[in-house]
Length: 91
Image (cartoon, rainbow, N blue to C red; front, side, top):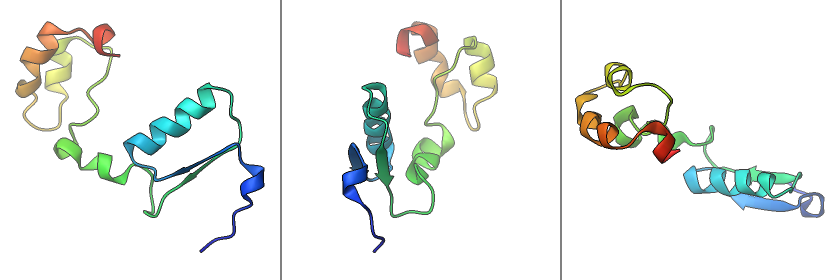
């Protein structure tokens, strides 16, 4: 186990999954400048890379046709949802 000087940090977040990264980001937005984000995996957000077979991050600012054409696999499944909601609605 590494030695951490907890007195140095304003906030310590355990786990760099989606929730942990959002927590650390929110802490930074609230003005905390010394945040420790601790993760056991070798890269942060590792599980996000496999979520939805690589289709997890669907926020963007392009038209529906471009989104569907640039989705890694079977982008057509997004067509109905993104035709109903624009990117400005969900971001």
